[in-house]
Amino acid sequence: MSYAGIQENLISSNETDIVADAQKGDLEAFNKLVLSYQDRIFNLAVRILGDSALAEDITQNTFLTAYLNMLSFRNGSFRGWLFRITTNLCYDVHRRHKRYPVVSLENDVDNEERLSPLYDFPEPSTLPEKELEKRELEQVVQQALNQLDSDQRTVVTLIDIQDFDYKEAAQILEVPIGTVKSRLARARQQLRLRLSANN
Image (cartoon, rainbow, N blue to C red; front, top):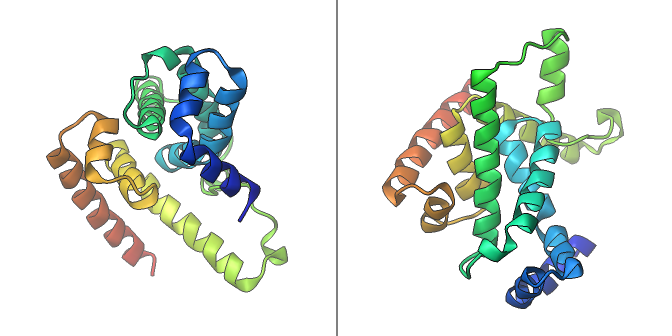
């Protein structure tokens, strides 16, 4: 198990106490929460936005927002609360981009290469064949996700990638469970169509 995995297990076993300490201003306790959740927050943001640089900004802003609002967290799921902050910040980015579209001065090929990877990968020639296939599949899936609208992309990320149940996803998105189910069904259908078109 990785160091991050060990940290995550230690934190999940006494997360309530750590959150309570963080609410009292204990910076070390808050940093433990950051270490436990930063990878999942980044993964959620990068799946929703399709851009690792933006996802890094969202990850930082999520923890800044959480730190400034720790006293507003009242029991419930801390993970859900964090993911709601992340999702709302991602939606803010989508709204800003719709209102004020950014026109890149780079050519389209450069943009496509910059947006498609989920992570900074090593050179393909240095990867074992299985690992290379996995990375290529991740890129294909992310490109298919990028073609969904933001509501569908978010719900499929929460449920199919982050393993939230319908109720938790509904709480994070602040919509009825029925809305989550219908968005998820449409998202899965669109993903199947897009992924089968790539085969």
